[in-house]
Image 1 (cartoon, rainbow, N blue to C red):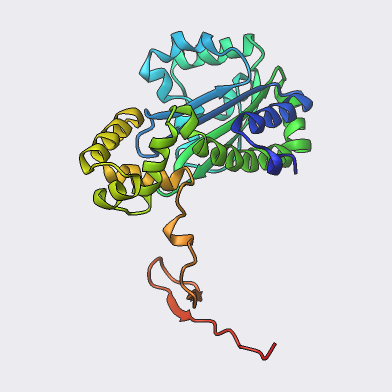
Image 2: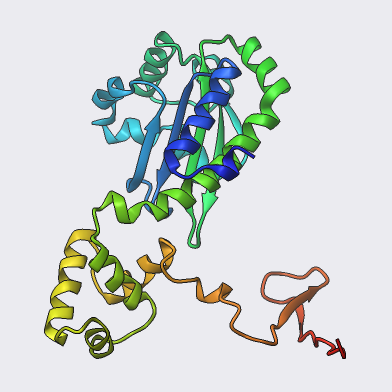
Amino acid sequence: MDLETTQSSAEVWALIVDIGRTLNLPYIDFVTANNYADWQKMLFVRTSYDSSWLNAFNTDPEIIKWSYFRTHAMERLTPIAIGLEFIDEYMHIPEQRYKVLEEAARRGLRAGFSVPLRSHAPPQSSMITFSGDHSKREMKRIIQTHGWVLNTVAVMGFQRYMTHFSAEFIDRNRISEKQRELLEMIGGGLQDKVIAEQLGVTVSAVRQRMNNLLSKTGLNNRADLAALAMSVGLVPDPLSRGADPDPVILVEMGVAPQGKGRFRKVSPKVEKSDD
């Protein structure tokens, strides 16, 4: 209920961290890649602690490649126990990566519980990890007692966080009200001439504003701007606009290989009453 009433990604993060601290897992990591196919492209990394000590290690791409995010979360959705205490349960890792886990343990991140996550299509890959200064036995007991709570908090918190995070793009990138208005018009499919007429400016002025918007957002073209307008909620997703007065329900029957199921379309008819 607290998550549902949040107004920002910061509020969601505070709730996730509070749960972790309540369960004696105060060290929270939240990692999200904006490109599932390319693990090197990170959207953001958020931690509940000062993680600057990792900077020296992360200069080595080979060390980064062996993180739990890259070796597990990119390919799987099963939660896992992590940290130096559980090192014997995993495949062989390079000596340099082992040193990272040793340093983490020295700083109180001796054992933890990681939940892989997905969003969007194509999917973004994420992972939320709760860690603390626990032995293997202690961590197993925490997972047995509170693992379902941690998993639920991670899944629900992630969805709510990303909803706010997308909407906050406008403020985060200091997009002005005029640029926001232009972005909404582009997302609505209006052409330059129509936009110019509605704004009371010339077509060249519209294109200049569009170029300024592309420069500020780091996007490449008009199609990217239209997609951005949908992502931040300025225009509705075309798949969920509900414009069809007689919606079609797609029903799949039976179990068959992907793409070979038997489908039938059902067009529900609403009976009109005399009331």
